[in-house]
Length: 106
Image 1 (cartoon, rainbow, N blue to C red):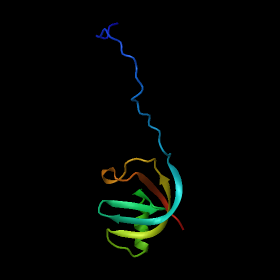
Image 2: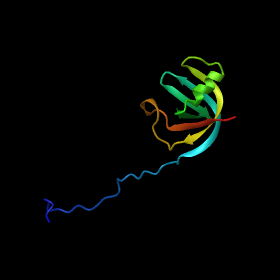
Image 3: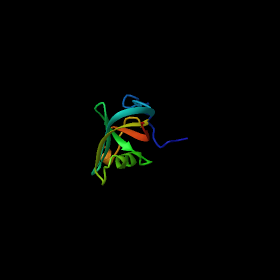
C-alpha cells in the first residue's frame, strides 16, 4: 500500500512533552479567608490562593450567618473540600489552584 510518499520519516520523540499531573484531587480541611467580589471568588490558606467552586453555596450561607449581606464578601472560615490538580481556573484561568467546597468546618 502506498502512502503517496517515497520517503520514510523516523519517529522523533525529542519534542514530545509528557503531561504529568503535579497532584491528584484530594480532600483537605483548610482554615483561611474567603473573598468574593467582581470576578474574584477565592479562598486563601497558608499563602496559597484557591479559586472557589461552591456548588452547594455553603460559603454564601455561612456569610449570611455572619450578617454579611450583599454580593461582596470577606471573612475567615474553615472548609473541607477537594483540591483539584494544578491548572487554570476561574475567570481567564488566572488561578492555578481550585478547591471545591464540600462542607464548612464546625
